[in-house]
Length: 260
Image (cartoon, rainbow, N blue to C red; front, side):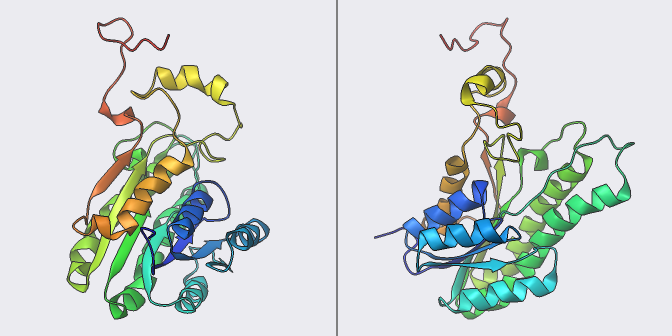
């Protein structure tokens, strides 16, 4: 028996990277999955490879009308029970250097897209007796770094939005949680395509587990939150960062890791 047998899930940003891994894992665990993205060729190829339990729909998450297509596709599989708001973009620049257009480009996709996703699924999930909404935030939704004013703003907003939605929707049997990844080995998290050998020295000085995260690390947490195993979890923050946020590694102090 799969952990998601009988469930119908929507995954945004599912054409590649973390979203693709999540969609494939959900399908392997028994869910029917609607993959949403703006990268149509890639998304259609992933859905075809998954098979009859998957469908691809072009969805720009920042456009309210596009969400109607996702709802229709999900209804074709049955009662919607899972939404994974994964789609996101990043942007870098100091506050002084960031134009309003650059700022709003990130906010519109990351923050508004998540809001529209939550709003769109409330009706179908309520009619089906409940479900699970999973919002991908970031460790930059818990703290921040210089150069990330737009991205951090959007991820803090997702964190707060999650809690408001959890309070409003709990009585309908809808759970809402946020996942906070650290660095992940995707096009967004590793844009230069560096090898693990090249990345290892950086991560060994950065996080307790000494490596960059892989998409499956995040997907496994999403699987838990989508499943009935997380039936008493809502409004919570689930950090998947290899220990990045637990503190700093000080090589000159006792107890520093020895990677050999």
